[in-house]
Length: 107
Image (cartoon, rainbow, N blue to C red; front, side, top):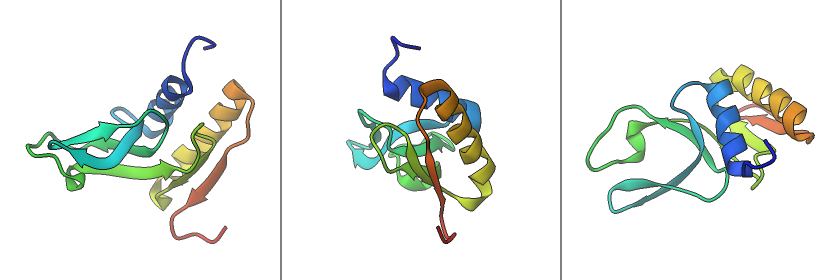
């Protein structure tokens, strides 16, 4: 894993924990009708279906990262188990603790 960027590692973990099609580097910005990738972990989402033009309503948004290295995230409550799995695997593979917050839950 040493040759992979943090973006690649985070995306592999997101896919493994949240499911097929999910990535962790989506932006919430639309340019020229397309959702943009960012250069770091940001929005955790997958495309529900393809549309022209694309809008955020065509996306299944699980949550978002609040750190550039993927070690802090906030997710929907129905995906808490996936987020806890992500945190465990991230710590095992990268050696850093992850802070998980759930939308609507007190810290």
